Image (cartoon, rainbow, N blue to C red; front, side):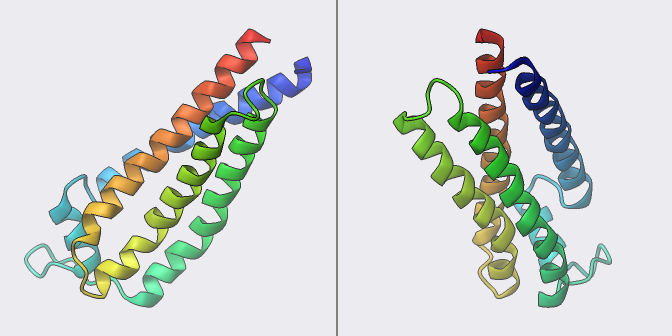
Amino acid sequence: MQRAYSLAVFYYLLFSILLVMSAVLIFETKIGFSINGILDYYLGNEEKYILKQSFESILKINLPHLFSFAALAMVLLHFLVFTKHRFSKRNTILIYATFITAFLEIFTPMFIINGFEFFAYLKLLSFFLFLSLVLYISWLLFISIINE
């Protein structure tokens, strides 16, 4: 890779790491890392004075996330294609896994508010899996920058 390209990738990775850290902090303070916390946040809880989320409120949150998750995944995976492992089966799996987990992370609340409470487990799993994939791809890119 050219030095300028490597620097651009490095700074993008730095911002991606900061994004992951802020996502974890916001999720923890707003919803919590428990199934009951997820259910309370989306279905409401009278004892905790938490209102039920409506379809419109979830849609208002999902629309910007839909673009930003896709852009983050596309840019990271695009950078990954320029590494020496561009044609590996691992990259194909990473591409599918990243977009599927992003999709699930964004749209599981729709199922939760429509009575499918078991999707709270999938919400928590997809949140951590998506962020783990972002961190793993970032690590692969960082290693490829160092080895150049």
